[in-house]
Image (cartoon, rainbow, N blue to C red; front, side):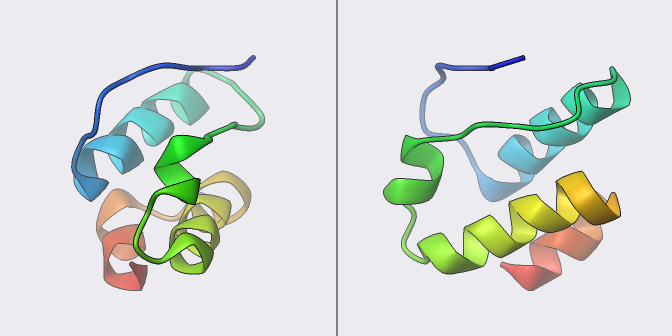
Amino acid sequence: MLVRGSGRVSDREILERTQGLLLQGVSGIAYGCKVIQYPNPKGVTRVLTAKVHDRASVDAALVMV
């Protein structure tokens, strides 16, 4: 599943949305501008990877940003 399109949202909001998708059974995510335009693309990639692969909680992931 490819989920696309949304306005600029807080870090917490994107992590909560990602968590919701994972809880619904998706096995991966694809974000474009959310990563490319982020002040620290490497950091946000690490956080999103932890959400998908390690099922990190939103609060744990926010600490990693």
